[in-house]
Image 1 (cartoon, rainbow, N blue to C red):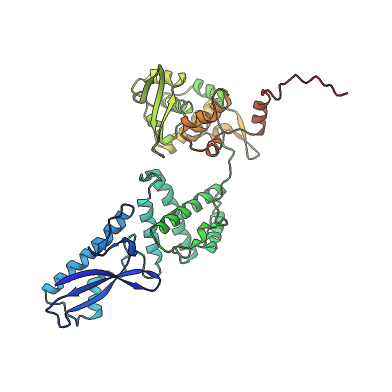
Image 2: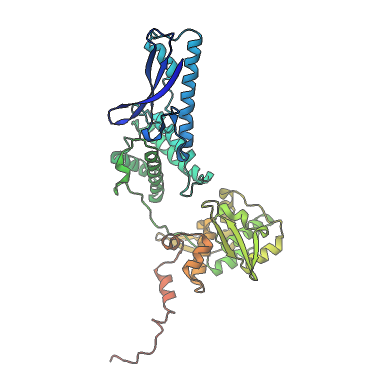
Length: 423
């Protein structure tokens, strides 16, 4: 008996995979039937009767080939049990080819019918699991967590609103309804924008896998909202107050980690790398080497005297870095004890300690380095790891008054060569 798999074109959809069985013991010698699976013709190896080995689709096509192997094995078992014949009923054959009719199509196979909601969310979860960066590196656990938050939000949304959702129904109506739903939950503009950004990312990934998707996500009106927030930075006086604050031993250790970060500019996820073991000595300069968890890029930052003094204080036994949430809670307490004063946020005067978080360290580094006037923007960007000046400048927490004060010292505003006096 020979069992072969081939393709059969049906309309404009990608070809469907069919199974052909040839056996001289069968009355009709052969029979064939659809497997219910589809694949692009360019991805099919006709000689092997299996999906080609394509690196970008390795997981998807490995699952497809495994399914074909299972079908072949089951057919052989049926023949051995003398159950295979041309008269095999369509229902019995369906059990051979489709043992679980409710089972979602393996990732990477183009669905033969409209997806169910569960298939849609299973596909979305699989995309998150397999998404890689532009350099082909798997995304980090924290990035996956962010994407999963959006997935859970949409699950909640369709359950509450009792609407059907699939790759083909994510249109402008869906966009507007989800936007209204998030507003009803009092989400900020940036939070709404973050979720729409993840939905667009998922749709692009699905399209890359040759799934049929609604093109509405490509429209300008399917926009990702992003508003610059009045987040704070800590200036020299603020940092000195924190350094001099009277703290217990536990808070003092966390304070020292935070101060190091304010002079290194790393993200909280990389603070554990602010350690003497990562020190390099190059051309009589002391540098700190960090491989950023988010981007996997290696950056080098000159070691500030404040960082050197903290390294000297602890040696190789630097305090461990707690989770972001625990650190933020401790920072509020540290900053309150340091009595940082007040700050204006969106027109409201608030105690500054209420606005301090782990990310304040990165913003403080970028802003203070910029205000020092001793470094070019591109030099600071090399330390923070920013790729574009636009993204970097969002970290410069200066208002119009701050820039005016800085500009007042420029040669343009201090030029006294003009002797004209207007009467």
